[in-house]
Image 1 (cartoon, one colour):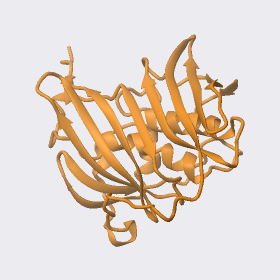
Image 2 (tube, helix red, strand yellow):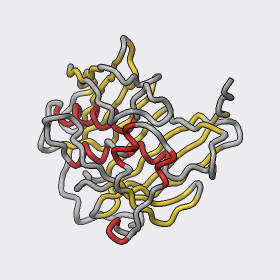
Image 3 (cartoon, helix red, strand yellow):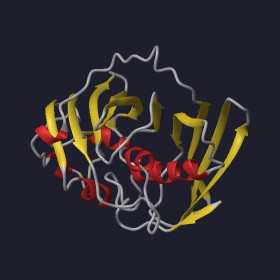
Image 4 (cartoon, one colour):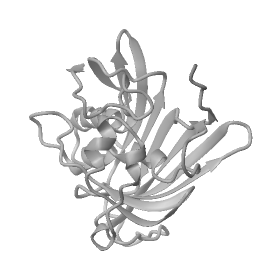
Amino acid sequence: MASYRPTINPQGAWNDKEQHMAPATGVICAELEQFQPKDNMRYARISLDILGMIHLSDFKITTRCIRPGRTIELIESTFESEGRTCIIARAWRLITEDTSAIAGLEDKTIPSYEKLPKWEGMSIWGGGYIKSVSKDIREGERRPGKGQVWLTNDLDMVEGKPTSSFVKLMGMVDTMNGVVERQDGAFTYMFPNVDLQIHLYRMPQGKWLGLDVQQQYGADGIGLTSAVLHDEEGPFGHAEQILTVRKVPRKN
């Protein structure tokens, strides 16, 4: 079990008393990375369920192996704050071997961040986390519901410890829900996610995360945000989030 005290940098966008899911994912991934590491295995899927508010207060993460094996393992991390479990993450760790002879991808690359203009559109969101990444966001083709952005930040996930590419990029994936919002202008509907599913067909490299995102709303209050994940070398995986779409409460 590891204990943490958050700074203002993980502060959420929907509520200033909660943590944003992006850095919460990152610190969970930091714990997963350190848990009984094995040179011949790596994480291939990380599935995170959000059980309630992720409080902007002291928290602890407990990690354990719930399905051991020589070639396949299932690792679980729980994120607890203020006496309750906020997030449960389960991650499949799989054996690696050389499959370069048959390797092939269908995901298309997106333009490099070096060729794209800076984008100030994230300024519609509040909170310390968005401020930490909005210093340098690059915009590709984008419209409400679909688009491409690159983002980075200059912060370590855990103070005093080096941040790997895996942890840094996983700690920004959840940003995808706020970059192609379908509502142009003032929000009349909220659309927070209740989960985050990440699938990795290779490990990410570098410090820039590229998101090729689409956001879709059904007609009965449920939506879906999907993204192809990119680093400076190209696409490396996919992510999805189920959304609860509901009218913004009126202020009394």
